[in-house]
Image (cartoon, rainbow, N blue to C red; front, side, top):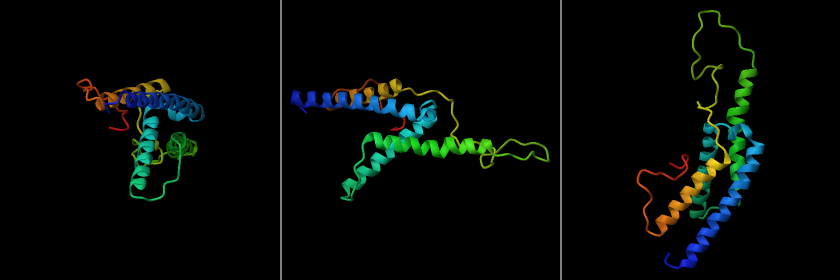
Amino acid sequence: MSDPRDLVRLAAGAALAAVDLRSSLAALGQEFPEVFEDEDLSETAGRKVFKARHERALRAQQGLPVEPKSDYDLMREACQYVQDQYIRQDQYIRSEPHPEPQSRSREPTRGSATMSNRPESASTPMDAESILERHRKAAVAQLAEARGQEVGIGENPMPSYID
């Protein structure tokens, strides 16, 4: 990539992608606030998006048909999945009447009905700005790598769901 125009096109594409990502995240944050307010749930959704992109790329590489979907649609499906699998199921479990144990009480185990199906979380909110900052750092690292520059030692600009 020695042509400066290629670098300009790459930077412009990254800037447009960041704007598109910001508006997509804002819309999805309104629709799925429970997912965006919990770091583990938003990371689970992010991993789901990454996996969907990877599977779609593999299918295309193998010459298999791939249904066209926007990043917004992939992210929305991932948020819907997380909401259905963790949030709604957790609310259902909490709303069920649970009989009082007749013997001595014991701590719930992972398989017990009183244990939440939700991943353990520090409940650290993930806002759109922090997600955008992680993606911005990743884009800068990719540009630096394309120019043959090194990324700072000890820095990992990639989003945690890509690690």
